[in-house]
Image (cartoon, rainbow, N blue to C red; front, side, top):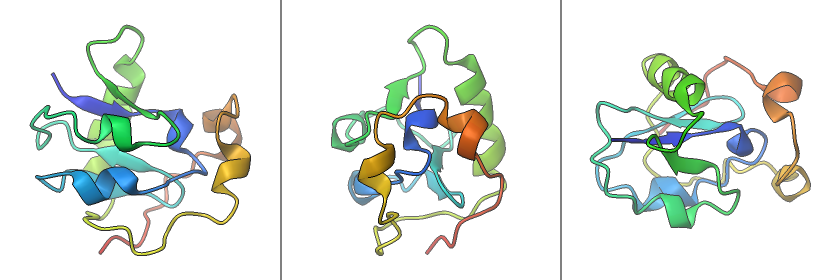
Length: 113
């Protein structure tokens, strides 16, 4: 088992999860985060820290596409280990919005640490 970041993170990217991760398995895209499934130790401390409720265990049904996306982009994006003020100013406006992947997903990398 591993945890995955879903489209609920897009345009929110609160970064609270990054601060508590004991193994630094988060990677930063331009407008969302992903988890490297090979590095995740399944501790679950990140899940309750996410204000957008974007982090879920991969044992929940229907998350196959998110596991693949997390795996692919964690190999391309830079590692991020702390919240250095990268949360978008309009994050709260996008919290809970539907269809964010189709509207806003960007494959571009973030800044990382």
